[in-house]
Length: 454
Image (cartoon, rainbow, N blue to C red):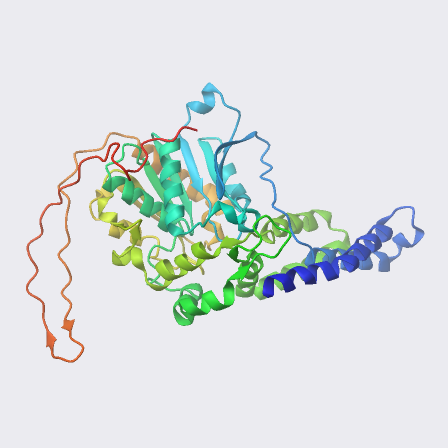
């Protein structure tokens, strides 16, 4: 019932929102003699704040001043490429930015895209709002997300670089591990993981602790709702974007409150530049999208509660996801010192789990003073992180040295506890043996597609 009530609330406020807009226009009209009174500017500011607080924000545009092309598309995702096709653009290395599917649109990474445009062919995943996808398109869970990543890596390869921002770090790692296990020829050259929750047992944040304290059933009962009528996805079970936005703002409520008070003061004083910056930020921040229920719940359970990837129990289509299979794709982990969403060490865990990747192919950077947003956007990102990432990607294109024999870590001894009996110790661990990698799957049924044409 929450989703219909939310929609009904917006409809009920629509007349007042229109009245506020009309009042604002009247107070700012230069032909209105009362517009020059000090009270008129205060009234206009109040009307604008009310209208913005009750508005439903549409998906923003990238607006980077370069041509945008859709080069790959499925019901739940499309890939946008930037720049007019030319020999000069083709000569640049390819970079796919995997945007998070966590409530905000891919345009939140506008600054990330802009930072790499001079040096790379930039592609970005543009995930669909689940309420805009018809129910006939089927489900979209974590396995489907991994399938999408594999298909994109194959479609945009060879010599593709990948940057996963926050949430997609886990499915991107899983996709790379499965491609490596299949000896796929189009495995990405490198992957940069920025603030990704690879192992949330390390330095757990309030977000991580809440997932463990509440449990799966609580999220399923309180966070999943059906899309109401009037949308293409009517009837689909989703995690509504307005709930995610409420959670984001609740984490820093005082900061957002102070920002809106400052916005009101800027409008009253006529500080147009400061007001414009506020509008630009919140037009992006308040634009949210719905997530499919299956993807949201599977991510909560397998990433934040069960910790399947670091424990080695994550499976994709029935096959185990083993980061020890990664031996060709270079990995870089980027973390922020003051990140309150993904704690220190959570992303670095990927480097520790890739036991068969040479140390020379691993890079770690902790950005001093940066929060979660600062490791993929802002001045610190442009000045400090982007040059390091570009250098890392360039190194990954150099011929690799002969790799050593894979290492199989000895199993950890755990006592076997019977339901009604004594504790028995397991036999001594057997000596480690080299892994025999399977032959390429070729055209065998169920094999990962070798390439998908754009």
